[in-house]
Image (cartoon, rainbow, N blue to C red; front, top):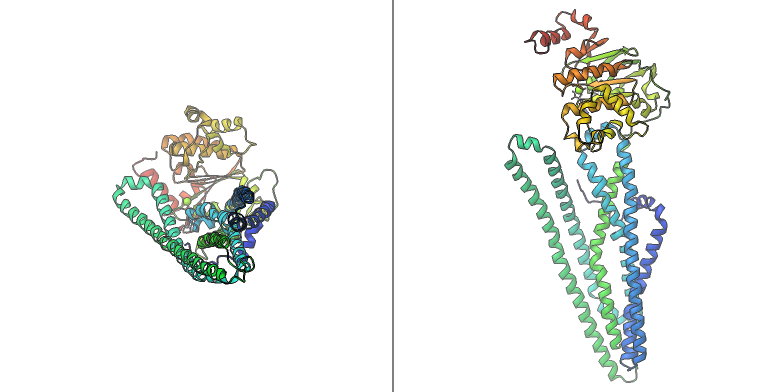
Length: 599
Ligand SMILES: Nc1ncnc2c1ncn2[C@@H]1O[C@H](COP(=O)(O)OP(=O)(O)O)[C@@H](O)[C@H]1O
Ligand SMILES: [Mg+2]
């Protein structure tokens, strides 16, 4: 998954990232100027050293030496301050850019169609919004600006050395091309090992995420030892990948040291040779073209300054490249245009709730039709019950109504208007859906009911809860409506969570109510409680109910029996019962005549 094929600098990508820098242009410019300033000021140190040694120490000029030392200390202080400020700014810049990007990415993810999430692992999206984004921050803090600064410093040092003494410089810099070659080889090597490390850390994350989510299954079936073995294998691979990548470093750094030593050796050898021969040829004075001890000292310092950034260059290039890869991945998420088109404009008060399906065909994938030629009408205030075996297409029918998925052929109308023509959020606000798997956020009960909608008051919440019959149990919770629900409602029973989801539906006062097996996870006693709530919920509203229990179904105005995406039977309870050998009749016999468990 973490294929590192990108170039270290992909200009098109970089340009796109720079769009996010725009609001921080000032910070960017100041950081860049500071980087140039730092390169210049760093170069000043060895020059001052040379002057100090040649002009003052060797000449015995104490006052001059003091002046140089004061100047050097001052420069050092300025350099430290500038360095601090530059580091601070580039980090702040990176963090600001990714904060904005993160908002952009999350906003985009929230707008994507459910279809996208059917095919995209949650773990992947989390990786995108967290760790991939982190690598983009590094482009600024460790990559781009700092590489530019390093290159500037390297070039200035080489140019300065050449101006000072090109022969000495050329001889001293003989190891440089070799070092650059080694750096390149190293860069390529760690690039692929970085890739390994990232792949394995992703695997480790996925493994942990999945196994912690499914911990109860592991414990029910006592699979701990088995899973432990798998975990050890994944963990081991991650360690090996890390060791491999560190191995390259442990080779590369000593190699750099060898080149540095060779360079300094050449400098001292050739420099001293020249000093000695200059002394013999008295006609040439040291000032004219010769080499002084100060110059050798300066060159040694310059060489160290030269090699230090080169040693880090490979690392920084990789950081940059990782950032580019991260950016590429994030922009891919941002570029997914699986956003439900929201071109409709109609949003007028409350819908009456007349629903009409006309020859609707629907498929999740290509033309594997899940719903085939479905037609029916529900009048305002009526209740439709959908029955049929698992996988018949009941949930798909309501997914279409919410426009979670778009239909293939035919059309769906509410109050005689095509779904597409309604403003999407308005449409969804008119349809409240209660599903079997209740999702609760880690927040208070009250906020889970209102979903933080500020226009819903506490009084409305309590009233809705009373109507549904949830008020009593909520009151008994520590803190009542302010009781903090733990992640995914783990601290509530399934029935309690279901009741809360009913309150949530009621408080939004929708025109259309959809219940998808909403009472499947509660016991019969609670169901009776909920049944009263449902009756109240359905008053004056159009409702679509998917249920297994006939007690719920038989009160519906219209019942549709779905089978493999087709309507097999449609009519009232009494009408359907009359069909000899019909599906509904069989269901009825099964539930009412066998052992009489239901009634
Ligand atoms: N998100 C999805 N992606 C692809 N196929 C799906 C998806 N959801 C449901 N299906 C398929 O559509 C068919 C109908 O499913 P569904 O409407 O959920 O049935 P029901 O609610 O009646 O049990 C099933 O064959 C199911 O496998
Ligand atoms: Mg279903």
